[in-house]
Length: 116
Image (cartoon, rainbow, N blue to C red):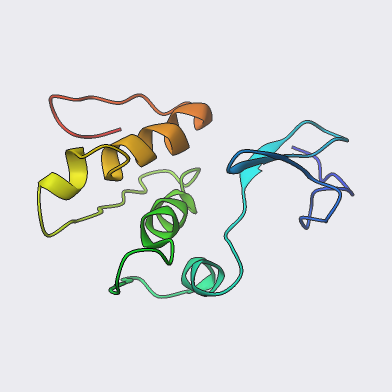
């Protein structure tokens, strides 16, 4: 894909589509981390990232964004763990958020294996 002068690097002229953003020049869609915790988490070069805190700072979204960072690299795999199984399947839990995040990227959810 050739670089678009509007969206690479991301610029304020992007159009929000819920949590997704769309470049008006090339129609490319992507997710941007929020300033603060998410941006620092996603910018990390660490091989292993651990996040812990109370509800609200966007840990789940940061985990999903960080896991998708190298999705185009051959052989790349990511593992996201949660302490409680109920954190996976509750309404707007990890599975719901992962589906809304990865399916627009072409991800296919395999419920029997809990994988994309």
